[in-house]
Picture 1 (cartoon, rainbow over the protein chains, first blue to last red):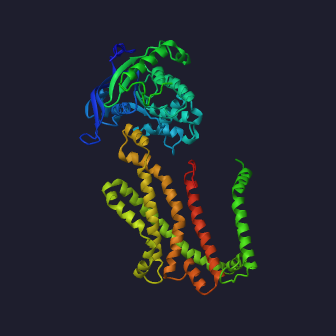
Picture 2 (picture 1 turned 90 degrees about the vertical axis):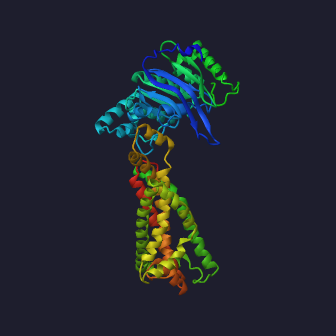
Length: 279
Length: 260
């Protein structure tokens, strides 16, 4: 592990997520047994933005689903917001967004954003007020009554983020949310995400394939390697001040990209990294 | 969109098939005249039209009989099909038992059951035909709706679980809305098939007041033009069922993309 791991950009005092020696084995004892994760330790401070990066099959999505309690670990503990992961899920302590926006195509944009609030049992007026607020946040107010298929891919993804944040969860879990977008939209969405999350003071755990995306967005980049999935490096990214379009041109940005890339090379797969976008 | 614009758009879609239909009828008429084809072999469209006009009220009565059979069978089959789809989703074990059975039944041309059904009821009863339609519709609806309830996007399911939604909430907010388009697909497939079944079932005997019986009896009496007139009535009935199914879909799901 690199020395940067301890030099985190933010204090570690209040951990939003703590993962203690977690291992995950699928089909245990079977011929097709998969050791997805092995002895993972990770901590995410409140308000921190942490990216998980690594080649396909390194278990980064699995790790995210363990935090979300959509999967239960084979061994080890996951603590979210000081509670067990399952209690955190029951309390809707996190919002989630995926590569597919996952909008419900029979619901309008506004009704999509209100869905988690409906499940929570909020009354109509309160839901409406909150969905208006969220639409304003993602700058889609005039599209409240549109159906999902009437929106572009980037707009759909913004609705998905608004939905994930609708109940004002302290934690946002994202699994390659911009993976299906073109490069221009993607950069725009990254800037939007930073703006939205700093406005709501949200902790983010973000899974990605893209090194520049991870560096641009994160306070720390967690580098993972496959078979079995484990953490090989943690790169602290202190780009100084606010991140904007100039950040992408800055020397320190490229330094950090190089550092993450070297971390990935150290995973023993050589230069021909599969599933990593180097652009 | 303006009303005039809509009319123009509809017409631009409509004129090629209308023109083709008109040319087809014209060529048919000419062939019958030029080759002097006998009326009992193939009557000209004009003769069929005359026969149709001649028997409008009889044809209408026959349409009502067959149409009622089809409608009752369609409704009952849908109700049972939807109910069974829910049961299959709720109880996995039921699904494991019935799926191979359903596949096996699907391979059987179930229309051959009509004579058996006829034997079970009195000769003038419409019940065997309605039973037949019910059975055919039931399987179409069951297969489609069960698929719609089950094939929910994995992302939707993960989202609902991340909201800590209960199974009944997932059913109401995810599975049922997901199955609605499948139900209408089933309805659009089943509606014309219900008519076909109601009407073919009459070929196997039983009471003598429907379209199917009228066609066969007129053919055997060499009144070919009359039997063709009943065929026209059957076409109208099938079309009416299909359009009603499409219309119902448009009315109930105004904001979704309607696929035809």
